[in-house]
Image (cartoon, rainbow, N blue to C red):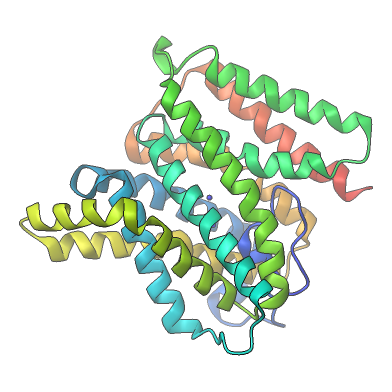
Length: 314
């Protein structure tokens, strides 16, 4: 749901990467690539990882897949960053624990949402979390127009029904709301962690906490899924590959982009994520939404971009 030492701004586009210090420069192929292209690639990678994760639900279960993905991501980040906890205050560790718990909730609830709703609809519902954070920092009454536009988009998505006239799963909608709440907490906690942990060390610690938090829910499903599989090694490799698609690779792409891209532009680009999710859902999973649902997603995307633009001018 994919950070600085100055802290990240509390706007819809403040993912964890925006709270990591921006190193100067950026060589290699990524350093020469256009920054907006890197942002789009990061979004596509995130949504592709989410789409591919749904194929593991049958073998590992929703909770098992979420748990194993966090475990793999935590292992990679711990190996790369080797975080130092000695000398950290209880407040710093509590902030990392809060971020890890929010990460676990966002990962689990979003996976549960995608198991019941189309990917584009799921991503749009989850995106209401960061949009709410942005609107909470609005200083003008006119900003309420973005809240009304977002609410209209959600109404089109949820009240009118799914593609083909099918009613949307009420439990899926509830899971989407829970994922949005966790996403909002995730952004707030990221600001605190990014201010006290260098680089990606805070992210590595929080991912580890998130994996531990999901263990009671996912460990049993992973155990049974591995035991029942004729090729458990392949299953583990598939889960590790999904973990690389989300969150490791997107954070590298976003970090490189943020070295050369103003945060305001980055925020507007990230507002396209629900639309990217809809496209990936169609191409990877064959999920086709009706024009009413597409209009609802467009409303949420427009509200996010508008809230970002106006908040930057205050």
